[in-house]
Length: 186
Image 1: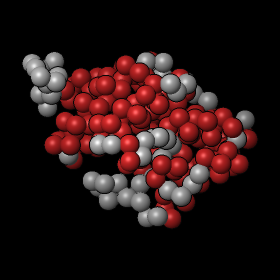
Image 2: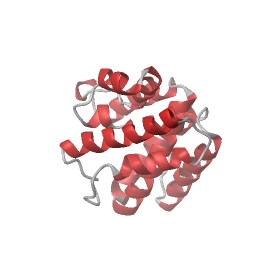
Image 3: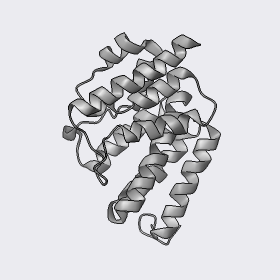
């Protein structure tokens, strides 16, 4: 048990250092970026979980946003955590096309992920939705449309988090009067 607790603490320290090295900040608040992985890890820890899932929650943006590689994650945290982080890392590249095309590629990748990665993805959606809805209602319309398309692919994640994410998205759809392509409000 001590080893597992050490895994989570090491993931926290590793992610804090990785995001801190590039002075990454939250877009709307200017807070140190680590507040987001911290929130995601806390959300994951609020439902049944393993220590590897919580560690992956701390690390979920390190490969995508910092100079950390999956190989480094594997060396430091083992195969299970590295696999989860790999599933949580966007695979699209700018050369793949516009935002819609890139998000479709990333959505397909997320849809193939194992249930534990989907649980972290749901926690990420929950935390990001709060911030985006509060600080950027204009972009929130695009973001919520993307998350509404993603949610059905995350069903295998934790049921409690799926219900929370679905509720957030549905409330935002109503509040922002987001209409389906070519039509009436949902």
